[in-house]
Image 1: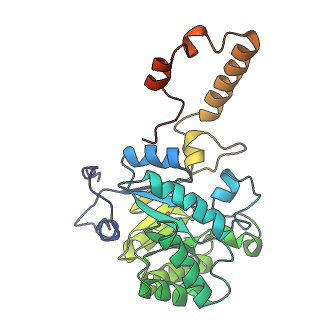
Image 2: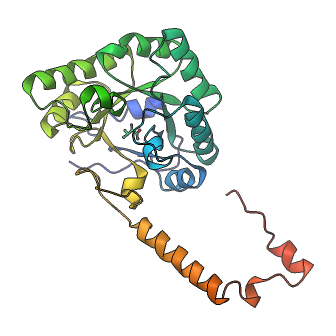
Length: 293
Ligand code: KIV
C-alpha cells in the first residue's frame, strides 16, 4: 500500500522518524535517506525534501579515494559533517562513527560521539554492529545522543567478513542478524540500517521491530531506504551494486562539460568579451564572490 508523503516543510526530528514506523493497520510514508558529504549536495538534497542525511563513512571510498571505510578518521567525519550541517535546514543529520572511534573504550567512544554532535552539528550518530554494541548504544542514549544501528553487512567488518558479501543467507546467519537487530533496538536505538541481506529476512526484522528499519540492499519492505548519493547520481566508477538505482549520469555530464571548457579555452572562445569586466559598475553588479544560498 502506498501512502502520501507528509508536507516537506517542517524540521525532521528523531520522534518524527520514530513515528514513521509502519504497521499493517497504520501505514506510514517511507523514510527517505541519502548520504551527503558536502555543502552544495546537502543543500540540494535538503531542498528536495529528503528526510535524513547520512554523513556516512562511505565518504572514504566515494569522496576520499580510500580502498575501504577503515582509514576514515573522526577529524574527516567532523570536517564533512560541519559542511552538511551548514547546508541543512530540514533533514535530520546522522553522522557515522568511523572505524576506531568506538572500539577502544566506552569513555572514548562517548567522547567521540559527543564531538560529532557538539562540533559537527550531527543530530544522531550511526554505529555499526549488533549484540556487541549493546553497552555502547545504551551509554550514547544516556548521554542524550540518538543512535541509528546498522546490521547485516557492516563495511567496517570487511576484514573479519572476508569481503563485501550479502549477510544472513543461511538459517543460522539469518538468526544472528535478527538477534543483532533486536539487541540494537533493546539498547535504545531509534532506527536501524539493514544492509545487504535477503528481502525475506529484512521483511521479518521490519515486522518484528518497533523502531523503523532503513534498508540498503535489503528489499522494499523496510520502513525506509538509503542509498549512497554518488551511486544514485552516476558519479561512481566500476560496477554498481545490484540494489543501487542510477537516477542520473553526472559522470558523463561532468566529463562533457570539462572537455567543452578545455576546447573553448584552447580555441580562445572563452572568456568572451561579454564575460569580461569593463567598468566598476559591472563589478559591483556581479562581483566575483559567490553567494552561499
Ligand atoms: O557509510 C554509509 O554510506 C552507510 C550507508 C551505506 C548506510 O553506512
